[in-house]
Image 1 (tube, helix red, strand yellow):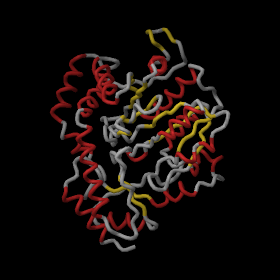
Image 2: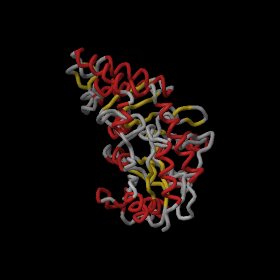
Image 3: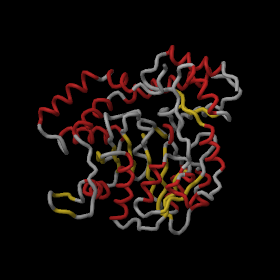
Image 4: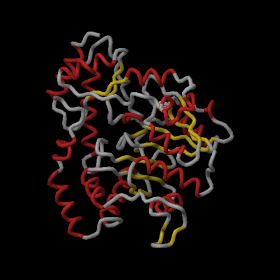
Length: 368
């Protein structure tokens, strides 16, 4: 079986270094808010180019805390609107609504599956306070036009960078493109922990200070609570693992790019829509390699029968979920087509050339 993602092999490739750091952490007797978290935060900030990095419990909390920070600082208030892509993973939207803010869904581009920047301005109202961009599947979504729209309307740009760590736009890394960025280090991400973990980057010192307090029970000083905060802290063990793996993220992403380049160059089947080749300006780090086909179930069954594991990212769009049943009337045809047709092929830093060749051959021989 060609696994969709072989997490065991990915982590075994760093086994010696991880074991050394974990043993050091174990022997230290300090398991929260210690040197491992501090070191990882410093290295993450340095890597992205941002001034501040804060470790948190998971990617959803990262986005929740950014928005909560703006609320506490008076830059947003409950009932304000945040623009967000309609086809994102639901966590991006949960972070907005959980803060009493209103998600405003914008259709994606059918070419690259990210938010269609040309559709954003028509959704802006007097209550719009931010644009939550999602670098979906690992492809950067950013442009001078987006910056100009945000500046003209005095909007915050928040990056959901759960899937695109290491990608660049005009040589600037994700995590340092907007006003703040949320990261997920879920085990299956390009930079994955051994459990749940997340992070935030920003150049805004006051926002960073506010988020640090919010993530620690609303406290900057033990037993002194400024805010009604959360318990959302990155632990020492996950920080140690992430700091080891951060050193290899560029090489791992380069391997993903090599596999994606082969898929795009060598898959030849009229029933398959391949992803757009990324530009030199907006990079793709291929967290997920998406293809589209009208008969997805048949193709997925065919690949499963031939020992290739695939996944669907994502089978149900947010506006069709019961959690947001008030949106079921919305007409979002591009989003719905994407969710009905996408299939994710295996891609990872540990895939062999033989495995890549097998996937390509199977798809080229597929007859819908």
